[in-house]
Length: 119
Image 1 (cartoon, rainbow, N blue to C red):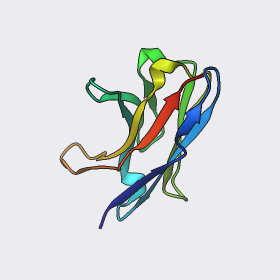
Image 2: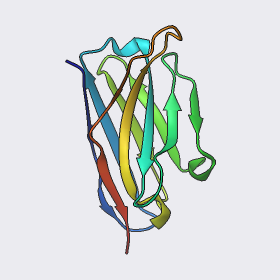
Image 3: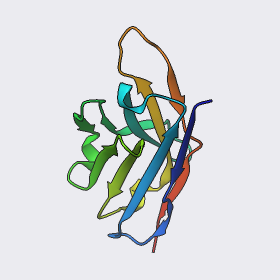
Image 4: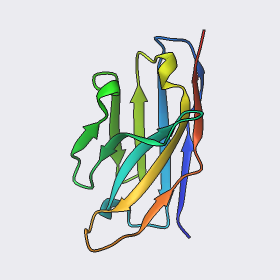
């Protein structure tokens, strides 16, 4: 059974930092690209950051220079370090695992963790 368990969300003031973690089990972690998505109330879910199975990264423009995605294959965990947080970053953050093999379609989601940026 595949499980992705996010943690690290919470309430933080503007300009503050949070570090999200997503622990994966039930998959061969090193064969999956990992992504962080977010969904704010009334908005569509959007990709925030992505890291491939070989460590290449990509970010949405609004978080470049503030957020850093990383992975630890030994711990089967992906992280999102979020610095200089803004109220616009408020959302539920979800972890997603996608098979890196382009001939496979399996993908899995975590349950989400709430991030609220407010003074």
